Image (cartoon, rainbow over all chains, first blue to last red; front, side):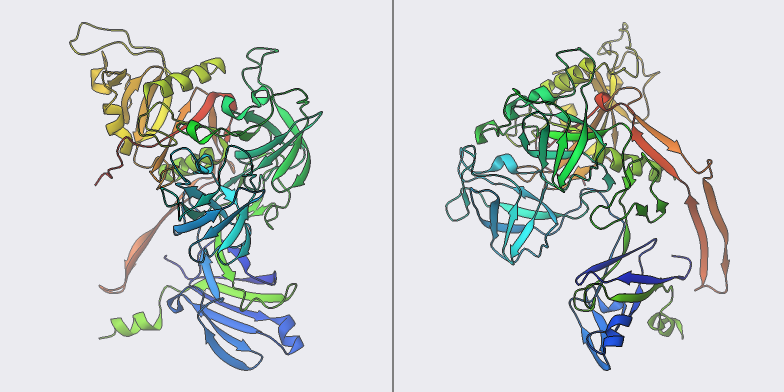
Length: 349
Length: 207
């Protein structure tokens, strides 16, 4: 880092962890919550330097200073693909819709995080190993519990219990699940009909008008949706368009799938070399709508219409202990100082 | 700079392209290690999708130990799975040094099998401990011609930024070297690219 860098701006508090995206990773941050100051209640000022550690902050609660070590400031850097959080052991996974996961220790996740599982083996022929290694978005229900959007009450699954299982199942967070969007997504369910409703295991980031293709291996049933081979016009790819977005994990596609083979889940015995069903964005993309709270602006400016959007980002997070109340106006300053007082003291002879 | 361009394109393909899990190996994981049937399946998939091959074949010559090479697609793989390719010698894999001639071989080319010529890199994507049984998962990009593209943007305004070192003493020397560029990347033919995921037969790390 050659230069000192300094940025400032305002952000509206989310009432909890509030991100601020920057074109650099800061080593000092200061905020002033004007709403809390006017209300004369709550945290109205906070500051941080990187030597304090992640999650810490010097806090001023309307004239009462203190130092906190959790819930303060944290920084995040430009994402790299295939990065994971710590491994957490699993105690149980229910055969239910949705599946409920109970971890042996606090999982540290928040709703919206993405995870992958390993070793979902209850016995040599039972368990949920068909779900291992693909990402799922979680809904947190407790410090050791969360659900995933998958119907494990189907006959191909049996509940997992580490107390009687032959392998220890684990889960870990996928730290940067979506570097580029719209991206390929794994499918958890397909509802057939005059239009086709597709449910994905993680937020799909598609918008109305997005052209899509399907890759559905034969063991999962609905192979008639595959773009190729096209049985009607061999060699001509079959594509669909998203015509509705009922939720962040479902889309409606304008393909008439009436009479197609039902979507199904392979048995545990068919796991080896099992490819997963996928929906893929193709053609010009209809990027530019809200996604995970991000607008079409990237750290480098507005999205190029029709392009894949680069979700790589870095900056800092105003933690829940200092973010005030939702809709509070927070003025922030952040920067990189290349020299610290400690460094100067060390170099002076 | 070129490395940064390659890494961006690598991560983009990882996000956007569809995947096929290797199932032709013997380690009973998902995905398995690479087997001959995996190359056959992906090759047939690309052929059925009317993908164009990058290079024509290499005819056989009277040189002991060599053999002809088919017209091929390219497969971009990790250097860490080179031992698994070596294990397929005799099952269809031909090392680059066993080509009839190396005139058309690329510096990073490791060998060929069926309709693929394999280029390896230490920066190929690897997901550590991410398979069903906790092995490392490798993402092998199998692609035909014109499957992906990379376009320089902003009027080709790529700049090398350099400031000479200056110093005011032995403890205060610094310089600046940076690049600034704008690019976009895209999959121009989604039917001509597949990401073949695999694990290794063993999981011994390279050192």
